[in-house]
Image 1 (cartoon, rainbow, N blue to C red):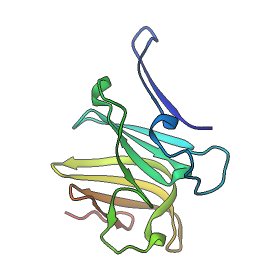
Image 2 (cartoon, one colour):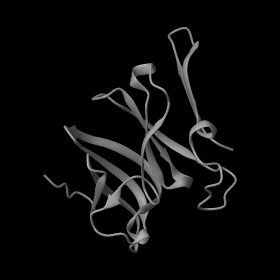
Image 3 (tube, rainbow, N blue to C red):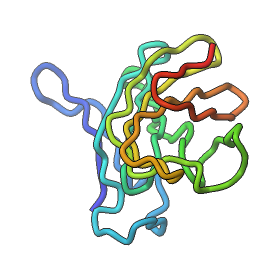
Image 4 (cartoon, rainbow, N blue to C red):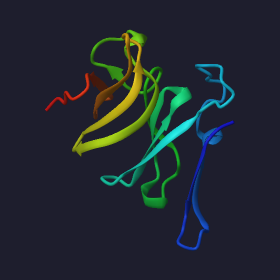
Length: 150
């Protein structure tokens, strides 16, 4: 099982569609569960018209080229273990979040995007809200709940 996104017009006609099987590696199974992606949140990014999609069983939040319905659907980046960002804290894979829920777009300011994520963090804190600050150089900083870097 995988996930898809369908954008409908005011008359319920499909005008744009995205399918995980077309854009993600079907052989990447982190948890061995039958619902391979388990999409659980979709956010619109007003600064660029793209989509942020949380895939719980991939332990990723991905950015999809939507461009207000004219985009290619390509995955622009993958945030999480084995994704496109390096952690500022180091390369230890246990520092990444996993099985996240409810990522929220906090702010977008030029080359920096700040997202809050409710997730299991492998550093011993279960179901913690963490903040991820993404920089244009593909680096990410995980911060404890309520701590945003300026």
